[in-house]
Image (cartoon, rainbow, N blue to C red; front, side, top):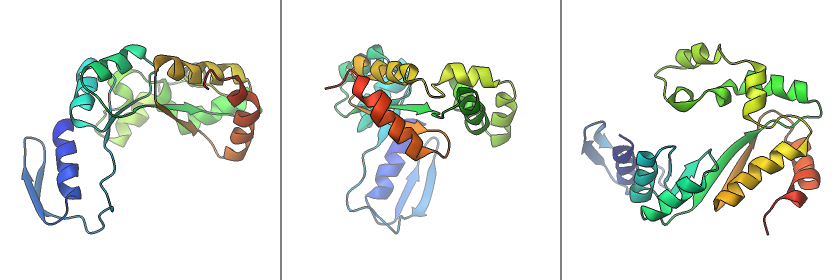
Length: 193
């Protein structure tokens, strides 16, 4: 399904009126009216060997939330030429308990495992699944609060696994506070050159 989705995206980005009849998707005289000057790269997410090999075969890069050197190796061995990109979430705040509560309120899916956190058919199903998630579970799943050690450990995990890029998402409204914290308490202690 994902492979066909990438094909459909690239077909639409080629311009003009396009049709597609596939196993999962059908387009009838579809057209994008606002095309980018150049098609953006398609980074394919993956968490297991099958998806990682697919990212290497059809993607312009590989993105994941797990700092796994094995996944980086598998992507490269399968022919992946594009960047390996990590994505992680943090919830900085001066009070750890308040930061955990905020992360639990805004992003409880972070504590769900496997496909449960990614592929449910309806938003109501996510609400049902996250009803089982406690604030403590979210606090264990991602760095929250003012202690830089967990943030450093999380980022260094991606660096040591061989990722090319890392995108960090601050959960919550205090982005300026997080950026000040990152620059003064985290960045100087990272294992990057």
